[in-house]
Image (cartoon, rainbow, N blue to C red; front, side, top):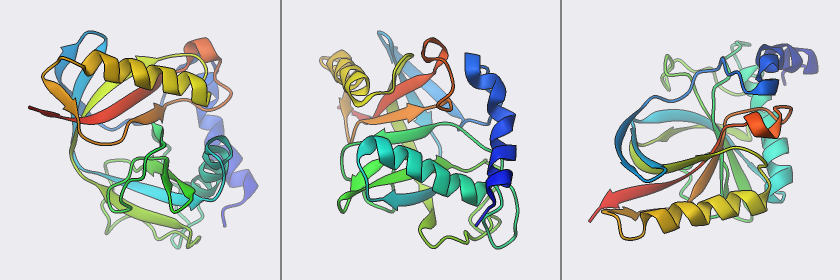
Amino acid sequence: MASVAAILTGLSATACSVVGVRTVEEPSFTVVERVGPVEIRHYGPRIAAQTVVQADVVDARSDGFRRIAGYIFGGNKARTSIAMTAPVAQSSAQIAMTAPVAQTQADGGQVIQFFMPKQYTMATLPVPNDPAVQLVTVPAQTMAVLRFSGSISPANVAEHQQTLLATLTGSAWHPDGAVVAWFYDPPWTLPPFRRNEVAVPVSLG
C-alpha cells in the first residue's frame, strides 16, 4: 500500500485548486451541439481505476478516493506514481462493471472511479497492489453535460440532474443511461470555485 506521505506529496500538487485553478489532465472530448446550458459531448474510450466501497454515497466517495489515490501514488507492483486526473464521478443507478462511470451503486455498494492519463494502455498501467482496485475500459460515449459550481451534496447534485433531464425534454437528444455527477476539484476547493458537472449518455432519435 502507498504510504500516507506519498499520497500527501501527490495531493500537494493540487493545492492551488483552493480557488479552482486546475493543473490535472482531463479526458478530451468534442462538443457536438449545445441545448441551452447543456453541452452534448463525445468522449473516446478511456481507462479507469475503480473500486467498490460498501458505504453511503458521501462516505464511499471519500473512502474510494483514498483507496485509488493509494494506487496512483505508488501502491502498485511497479511502485510507480501516476498523475492525478479529473473528474471523479457519481451515479445512483446500477451500471455494468465492464462499462462504469466513477461512482455508481453496485451490489449494495458504490463504485468509485478515476480516469487514467491518456498516455497509458492496459498493457502499460502498473498492476494495483490492492485487489479491491481494478482497471477497466470505459467505451466511447456521447454525453449531455450540465456544469455547475457550489456544494456537491446529494441534494444539490440531484437538483442539477433534474435540470439536465428537463433541458433535454423536447430536444433531439434522449437519455440513454444513468445520470452521473462529475467532480473536478478536491474537497478543500472553495464552493464558488468548484467545477462540478452532471451528465447522462444520450442518443439521437
